[in-house]
Image (cartoon, rainbow, N blue to C red; front, side, top):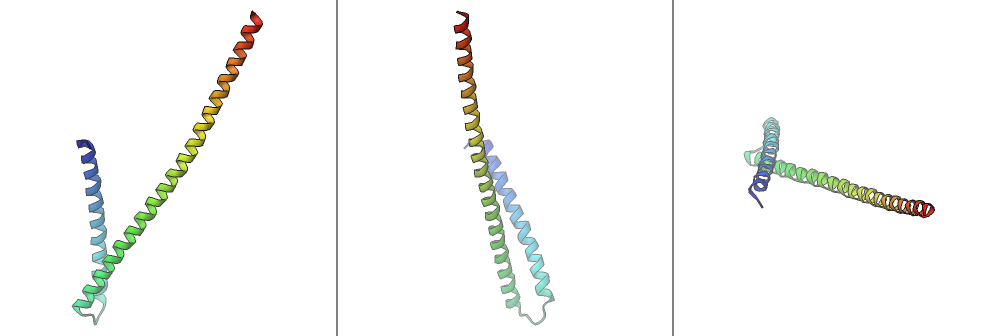
Length: 113
C-alpha cells in the first residue's frame, strides 16, 4: 500500500475512533446523570449500571453499523445487477445496429454494382 492510501486509511481510522469516543463520552454523561438522580444505590451498583449501559451502547452501535453496512452492500449488489443488465442491453443494441448497418451497406453496394 502506498503512502497516500495509508494516510487516507489512517485518517478514516482516527475519525472512527473519535466518533466512537464522542458517542461513549455522551453515553457516560447520560448514565452518570441517571445514576446521580437515583437514590439508594451504592457506589458499586452505580458502577455496575454504568458499565452495563456502556456495553449496551457499544452493542447497539455495532448493530447499527452492521445494519448500515448490510444496507449499503445490498444497494451495491442491486446497482451491479442493474448496471450489468444495462450493459448487456447496450451491447446487444450495438451489435444489432452494427449488423443492420453491415446489411444495409451490403445491399446498397450490391444494388450499385
